[in-house]
Image 1 (cartoon, helix red, strand yellow):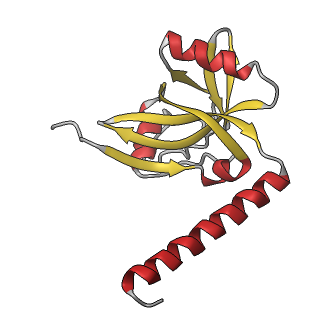
Image 2 (cartoon, helix red, strand yellow):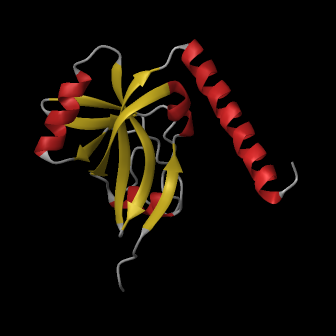
Length: 158
């Protein structure tokens, strides 16, 4: 059977873009068991409470919830186990140097299959203050109004 091509999204963490300013993003593989992959192929995962953490020069993903595979037997996985991320050594050093700054953390942004392999997009992020969130919402609303006005003008309605 040929390997599937393209990108197939499984889960995304939209709240991360609201709560954090994303400084840089990386694509990483994950060390998974067979039943985890089967559960992900059914589109079942939650990135809500997940975060990245460094341990002995390696990066791990904590809090990622992949529910148990329904057809699994005693070989089923633990839903919230710690999963190792697969990155190049250079990428790991870049991420770790950025994580040494105050207020910077590692958050998963999306989970997907890329050419048959399970991947996670992680972002080096800095937490937003509440006034930053309000400014972002105001800027987004203003941009939406500008786009509407330009659309009306292009159609000759204004």
